[in-house]
Image 1 (cartoon, rainbow, N blue to C red):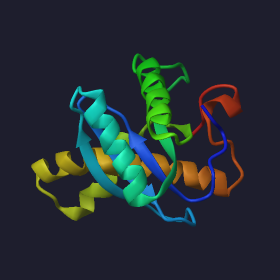
Image 2 (cartoon, one colour; image 1 turned 30 degrees about the horizontal axis):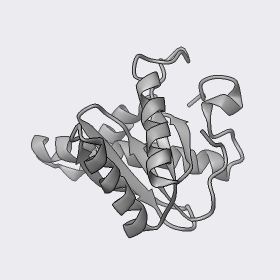
Image 3 (cartoon, helix red, strand yellow; image 1 turned 120 degrees about the horizontal axis):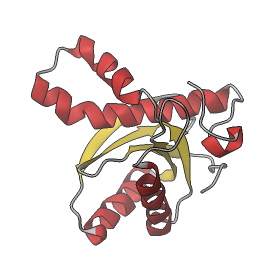
Length: 160
């Protein structure tokens, strides 16, 4: 995977076996916003079509994919699966992909949704997109402050 992403809008991805949260940022990379939650179909062709359409519709220059890492910095059971998904995503969309440590993003996403007073069903439906927003926002903040933005740049997991 790449460390450098070209100028332009990025999409943040919170990968899951059943759902994939998607967030996008503006072209200046100042603000990340939740976009949608994709129910995984198990059909790589349909999923590929979804991501290619996303790239075209939102003018996406690259992807920031959340990498699940244990609190102690070790890769999780899902890490290899997410890395394989990221390779597939890059190959399918012809866009570069980089990773962002996703530790504690679910907790942060839940906290962001708390003031919205959504029903439990609406929270569940939006959670993965908000988690993708947190992943993308964290990457944007690290990049803006000059901090390493990928686990490999720090010699392991990123510190939150």
